[in-house]
Image (tube, rainbow, N blue to C red):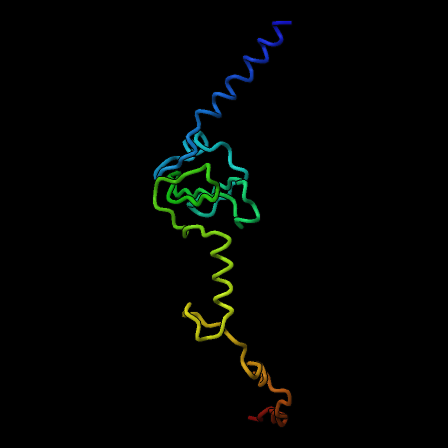
Length: 155
């Protein structure tokens, strides 16, 4: 009975210790292999030209509007955007700072207030007349006279 328990412990212990040794931090210049060692295998990976995008699922999902993202250029980290509080980017992220739900609601209410509001933003209004009121293709094209026929010339 002790052998199966010891066997199970021998299998589980390295996995648990490996997960605890992850730093969950990404630094500029790290290779993909180092990112995977720090964060684990990405849930999705895309390559476009010389850029590689590593997507990691996070706990905030739909509320955040995005997965955590690490961007590599030629196998070197150039940017990371993390919404998860368990992951960190030591460089300067291109993502703006996250705001609280309360701040987002207040900003949304300020944008919907009249034009004289303190926020300094104005909402766009649609044009009074549609832009396509005068189509560029004429509805009644002019009729043209038939072209004169060419008669063969005699020498």
